[in-house]
Image (cartoon, rainbow, N blue to C red; front, side):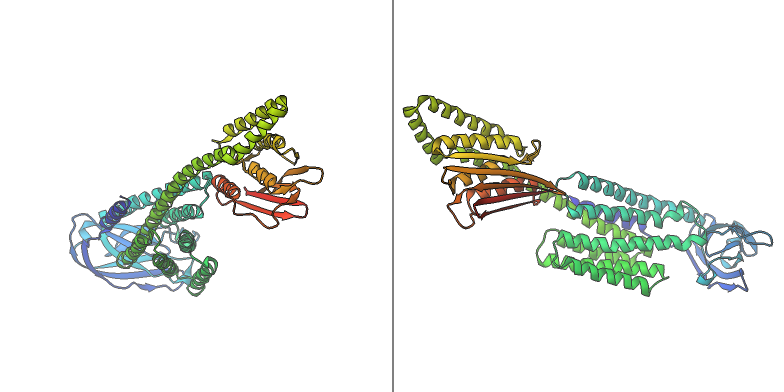
Length: 533
């Protein structure tokens, strides 16, 4: 469905931008006489055919403030030319004029542009004059703006949406932030490019807009290849981006002052860098690479065979639509991962329950219970109460992905009471720096405690000491669980079911933002859980 939407939008762009020649003419190059800041430019126009009945219009490109004459008749003025005692009021670079009907017949005509140019003389801007249907001159900006406003509005909304999605998501994907940035830059680029239709920009500020357009294109030329490098997890990203930056800066330096050419070369560099990354993704058979590569091929065709400015922005739009398609693929993967995490959560709940009703645990507990009932019925009853309280706590926390650390500690203490009945060992629980409101996945400290009991030999006084410490440093939280006893196992024990349970719980709650180590030290065993905020 998304592929068809992209295709229909592409078709719509082609239809909207189809051009029909309604006039046939020959225009000479402007002959400019510029002795000082005053100038006179003459253009010979030979009208050969007109297919419209609307008034004839005249389009003039020139710097300065001037009056325009058609066959010696004044047809309009752009700005206010300088005069003794009166400063120049700069006109716009592009201006439009209506030619009187009685002067718009077929044949040869002369356009004279007379005025002053007080600023930017060093640029030697070319003077051009072209006839066109006056009605078309008025309509064409409206047609272009309607499509451009549609595109700009869509990308502004996309930028806002993906910014909110990134800031409020637990899984902060860099591609989402990059896409939001690219959409916002593209919206700004469109706004700057077509700002000339909204406000009169004096020719003295003509290059300011082009400079801004150039830097916006520069930023987009960096961010789009970076997006593909991150999305397809391409190796050596940093060297690739550094080379890309060097290439773009070289274009800026070598083509300084050639604004349109610089923008075109930026776009070409973007295209080449992106296609290289897409070819890598295609070789790795990554999802979406084929469609995006086809989109880039289509963008190149459009850019080559359509009017330069419009073709460039349509090509950019097509590229962004391809990226949007990748974003939808990423969202689908997240949805699949979410379903997988729900299944994992259910499995972990079962694991948690199994951990405490396993036959080995029940058999040993019941055996101890029989002994206590026979030898001391009162102690036996107390044992049953302690055991039931541990099961009750376990039942309460089993369905929660995160529980308060105090609840976890209560569970551990209850388990120590049970084991104390069974093994007749003195278990000492200590804690340091614990903040009761901190959350933690259920039973992971409890699992470390079980391991400590199982794999430790009590000291000579039949005691084992446990210490749980908590530290919150900067963007990290750290739980350290230490068992002070003689180790039954001298080397690491990282492949047991208990460790797999801890790692699964941490991954379920924190994604990749955690670390877990467990290793012996002189006098015991130390496990560290690090959680990145």
